[in-house]
Amino acid sequence: MWDCEVDVVVVGYGGAGAAAAITASMAGAKVLVLEKNPEGGGNTRYSGGSMRTYSDQGMAVDYFEALCEGTTERAVVEAFVKESSRNPEWVKEIGGEVVHRPTGTKFPTSTMVAFPNVRGAAGMGPRARVKGKGEAAGIDLWGVLSRKVTETQIEVRCAAPAQQLLVEKGVGVTGVLASSEGKDLRVRARRGVILTCGGFEYDRTMHRNYIGQTFYGMCNPANTGDGIRLAAEIGADLWHMSATAATFGYKFPEFVFGIKQAMPSAGYIYVDQLGKRFMNEPGTDSHLIWAPVSHIDTKTLHRTRVPAYVIFDEDTRLRGPVASTEQGKVSDYHQWSKDNCVEIKKGWIKAADTIADLAPQINVRADQLQATIAHYNMQCVGGYDAEYGREPDTLVPIARGPYYAVEMWPCLFNTQGGPKRNERAQILDVRGRPISRLYSAGELGSLWHRQYPGAGNVSEALAFGRIAGRNAAAEMPAAG
Image (cartoon, rainbow, N blue to C red; front, side):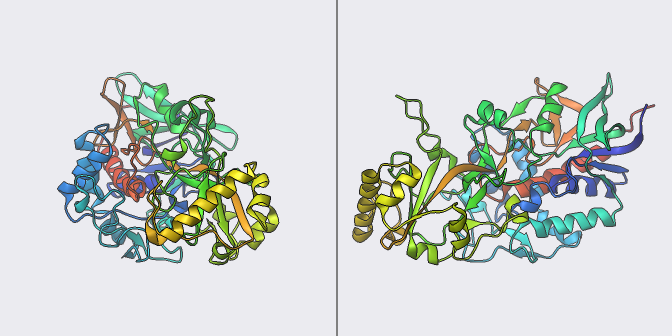
């Protein structure tokens, strides 16, 4: 009946899967990891790789609980904070060198907090990362994790997507049906199964049903909601399905994924399809960019900010690339030019000598776009943005041609929703009861709600990966 037997099966080989597999293996369990892609890494290798630290764990619990708006039980938040506080130490134990995030980032190194006015924010410490060539990127963290998996001699089967969870009445989840080399693979899990197979960044039907609008994914294209379907099929409850970590990005026909926008200076504005500004451009947290673009014209039911457009001038172009290609799936395919000239030649960046000539290239009325930029430039002279409250030092005029525009879309770092878990990383059914021998970790059923704090997903992947690995390995072996 079974093609192979192990103690613990881990479905998904990203950061959460690696942490779960390492922990379960070091607890004495025989572990098999099943990975849908031809290679591992998941979203972790495309992430920023930052880990949370805390100056006060109790305050940190208050902070995260407030951000989750009561949707996540305090016991789950407490388990996360307690376990994630060990992340830097654990990464060192498995061979990584940990450093604090460098200065020059958006938030002060002393706090690194996205929402400083929320209860408990003072309990946040500086972010930490693995030292390496990736300059704070998850590829360095993934290198440490994957080397430890190899060193621990954990078996990993790539190109082996899970198809179904196998359940035995009165026992619980006892195995996984996967596909490998064109054949069914039935794997028995004597102690438990851990789902760490990511979210639904690349399932646009799920976007419309759960998030309410269409996004483009920026990281692992294999994240198509598989784990959600696997767990829901056997009665799992779902939570945080409308929650995302998202930003503005570009989408070009050459690629299935989006590319993160990253402006080199403050000399730019965002405009909607009417040619009007609609937000504090540099002053909105990058993970919450979805909020202002979710606007719907109540008369026409048209989403006038999807897509939107970034407008900038020659001075801004010369200051550096207007996209970040060091991280995300794009890093496997394209590195943005330092002066943006390659992308202008490709037609990704629209260019014109005047604003009037630029406007029709993005289907915006020339008079409206000219009026918007003239008004913005006047505010730059006065040092006061009465409409959206940009800080005075970010009021840099758009003054010297040529002028440029790029179409922008809401783009996902990751989704947060999936099967609900408790503080032991057990997946719960619709009545709040643990589904026996089934665990999860990572963004699949994340604890985060819509106010994502930054560095939370990598921290959670490692923390709940270890929690799931420990508890799955401690299950009594199923008989038979």
